[in-house]
Length: 270
Image 1 (cartoon, helix red, strand yellow):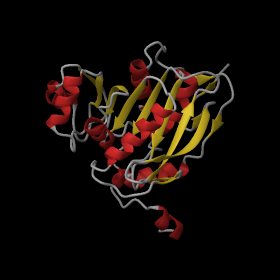
Image 2 (tube, rainbow, N blue to C red):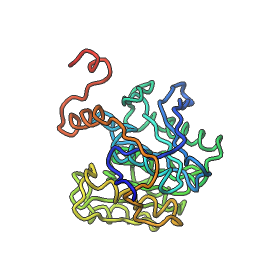
Image 3 (tube, helix red, strand yellow):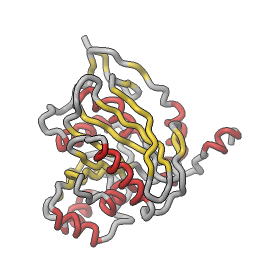
Image 4 (spheres, rainbow, N blue to C red):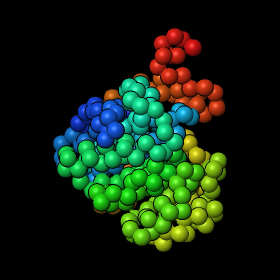
């Protein structure tokens, strides 16, 4: 009988710590997770929430995706800390640039995926990462994009128009109780993109606490439609447990709207 997959469960994968190199000379902390014993059927590049409010490559949905999807869905997961962003895995060079310089970060991730022949590349943004996706993710390599809790704050109508013209699949997964953009308004604002699919999640909130499994099922259904969903909630095989206490403390501070300590402050004990 399989073991229950919990929030900190880590399933088998080939994992590699990386440095992505941007065209403007920065090094970005990153990780690639591949299926352990097969080639991936698809590739997801994750673009994290706002780093000034605790967003990072280890934000809980993305961390769980990297822990689970290579084994459960045969999907490759590439995630990175955008410029100036901190996580336990390290701090990327540079400084947060309000979605402008972040175009080089997206390009570096796509260049890595192309150079390493990663198949069927999709972008998945969350919150601020959805704006970065809309602004800078319309690359020939990208098959489509999924937007989690899109606020439509930094992106502009011309970015939606470009996605509409390109005709690439675009899915907005919108929490019913989102703090910024709820399903009714989302449908109105995304009406400029004929092919967009707006998925309203009943009871969902911006941070997807307690609903990561639902989100991962929605993602896999689109990037790897041949994989059955819902994904298994148990695993019959090797499984380890990650120490997520540092991430949880970091995120709790951010979600309570208090200053989020960087590595220097954490080392100083503040």
